[in-house]
Length: 526
Image 1 (tube, rainbow, N blue to C red):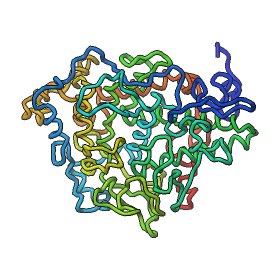
Image 2 (cartoon, helix red, strand yellow; image 1 turned 90 degrees about the vertical axis):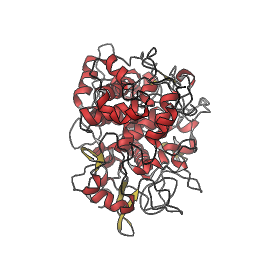
Image 3 (cartoon, rainbow, N blue to C red; image 1 turned 30 degrees about the vertical axis):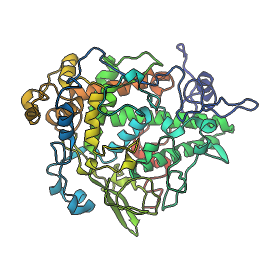
């Protein structure tokens, strides 16, 4: 760099320059999981995650000296949090599940208490979930029992490096790669269209098991696999011959286009474009790790980033004609659904209809796209009875909101009001949170951060995006993870622009991504 402009090739800039800085066979620093160069043994890595050199593999805090929202041992606290998050409680949207998955999408009168978000498409939820699984995996902290974040391991690298897709690379995670062409990831089908690789019992063979919790996230994982493989083919058509270089450069292209979409497409939907502009142009004020020393803050992991739970619809149309020529509608989860091809959208099964037609989730201009739910204090009813297979440790409680609220005790998180004061923004008044008053614990004045973030979005931004506390927490951490990763496009080459085919030159969004991956309606003849 040093003021010199590298010569850009058709893929965006000099592959030789990039590979010289990070090492052939790796996109992250240190080259773990790299393809072995001729005559050289690849380093052994027993873990599934691709590690950056010197990266922080535990959680941490943004606010070290801020008091928790309540004394963890306070009488009645745990019972109150469980009650707030329980089925039929104040967070439950009470969706009319008896009307079935089709009506819950098509009958707008059923959305009165769980309103749609006209500024988000249904896929926004699941891209956000994919991002979460790429940067954080709490593998052992106890629910409802205080734990030290710095002693709690994070099973993912705290960066948007797609270790959830690539694992430890072709050498460290050979089960993820095509044995006949180790530059490519393994993709299977077994249904009408693509699927992630699976064992005989249906267990997904992927870099993060959570990316098979339901059909939508496994479909997104499969799209990333195909995107990488198509990037390999494109590079080879342009003259790249080395298997190692094809893998490494395709991984860079995939990762940087993904990072571009995070910053330019999805983060503005989550926090608003003005908040993104403020953070990128004026700098981060609170989350400020040094380059190469990023960590996942528990204020983000345990609370603020869980805003996505409120965006989940009770049901979705997975595809338009996969169910015997008819559309396949299903609840996101339904405990009554059983058998080898259940009627809900849970993961872990392979059948012809269990694939995603992305027209429902992203706008291809054909009128088929559906909206998200708003960010507010209503959570779709199916999330109050999760199948154990959708929980990382396969252990109760099975109520998502209860799990999230108990994590506030685990991490001894500060209240939303105290963070608002630290940020210098107006805090919600006790009257805004009056539904918490009857617990007699002062929660309306010192509110669990996740609940506060949802309520703030509802009252300040009409549920369309996060408010000033949630928006800054999410925005600063997401931008900070990009800026502190030496191999991200934002850190390595801030002037880089997407180079793969797109409808708008120099830009790239999710429709472009799905089209390049070959999972778009046109590629499928629809």
